[in-house]
Amino acid sequence: MTLAIDRTSTQTQDSLASQGIPTVAGASLRVPLVTGGDIGYANLDHAASAPCLDAVRVAVDEFLPWYASVHRGAGFASQVSTKLYERTRATLRSFVGARRTDTVVFTRNTTDSFNLLARSLPPRTAVIVFDTEHHAALLPWQGPNVRRLPTPRTRLAAVSAVDEALAESPQGPRLVVVTGASNVTGELLPVAEIAAVARRHGARIALDAAQLAPHRRIAMQDLDVDYVALSGHKLYAPFGAGALIGRADWLRAARPYLAGGGATKLVTEDAVVWNTGPERHEAGSPNTVGVYALGVACETLSRNWAAVEAHEQALLVRLRKGLEGIPGCSELRLFDAPVDRVGTVSFVVAGFDPGWLAAVLSAEYGIGVRDGAFCAHIAAKRLIGVTGGEGQQAVRVSLGLGSTEEHVDRVLLALRQIVARGARWGYTNAGGRWAPVGDPRELPPFC
Image (cartoon, rainbow, N blue to C red; front, side, top):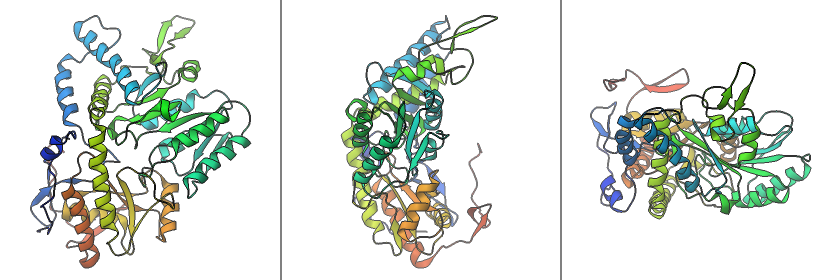
C-alpha cells in the first residue's frame, strides 16, 4: 500500500536533534503491515508509555556494569550505585522546582505514589478530587471524608467548585488532588489558581504530573503545591521507577508503606525502629537502575524545554487542524473555551467503533494510537456524551519527542481514507479487542 503523503516538510529524528530535541530509541523501527510489506512505526501513543530516550539507554548501558546494592554495601560498585541513587533525589527535586526541604520518595509510578500518599494522610483528612481524574489520582482516596467534584465546563468554575467544597469540609487536615494535564484531552487545569484557594482554606494540594512532566517545566514553588507525583515510563525512562516529591511531615509520621529491610533503623526481638527519611517508605532492594534512568531523563529534558514545547505545539496545531476536516470527527474537551494544552487529543468518529479504528490504523498504516476510556472512565463517558457520541470509548492520539510531521500527516490521511473507503482487511472482535482476521504478520523472535 502506498500512502500519498506530502513529505516536503516532514521531519526526521536527525533534524529534530539538530534543533536540540532529544532523540528516542525506536525512531527507526519498522513494523509489518497486514496488507504486506513494512513501514516506519508512527508511535502516537506517548501518553500511555513514552519511548526510551537515547540518552537514557546510553546512560543505563554505561551504568549496568557498576550496578550493585545500595546504602549498605562496602564494595566500590555499591558506593557508585548508592551515590547515583541518592544524587537522583536532588535531580528530581530540581526537575520539579521543589523546596529544599521537600522529600523525594522513589516509587514505581504515579499510581504507587498516590497510594503511598493516601496511606500517609493524618486521620480524618478530608480529600477533594475531581471525578474526571485518571484512576491513579481518583481511586486511592476512599472513605466518608472523600468528596468527588464533577469537572465544570470552565476553568473559573473549577476553581470555584474547589473553593466551595473546602468551605463546606470539616475542620482539620485537608488535601486537594488535581491533575496538571488531562490524560484524555491534554488540557491544562488551573493548578496555581486552585492552589491559591487551597492555601486560603489551610489545605494542602497534590499534583498529578504524570501527563504534565514530560511536556512542560514544573515549578512546585511557583504553583505552590505540596506534593507532585510522576512516572518514569511517561518521562522517556521506561525502567519501572516513579517518585512522590513533597512535604516530609505527613510521610515521616505515617507507618512505612512496606515493612522490610531498608525501612528500618533497628530491629530487636520486641520492637522495630523505623527510618524517618524517604527510606522509611522504600523497603526492599530498590530499583536502582530505574531511579538512575528517571534522573537522566529529567536532566535531558531540562536542557532545552523551549525546543521540546515548540516541537510538540507545532505538531498539535497540525493535528487538530487536520482532525477538523475529518467527516464526523468530534474532539473531546473538558472546557468550553480554548485552554493551554499538551499534545494529547481524543476524539470519536461518528459511525466508527474506536477499537476498530485503532486496529485498522495499526494493521494497515503502521500507526500506534490508544482506544478505550484511558483509565479515566468517568471523564471519557461524560465527554463522549457531550460530543453526541455513543458508548464510553474514544481514540487518543498523543504526541511526544518521538513524533514527527510525517506521523501526524499519516494518521490524518489514514482517517480520511478509512472514513471514505473503509478498511482493506477484515477484522473480528474477540474478547472486546479488534484484530485482523487471519493476521499474517509475525512477531519478532524474542516474543
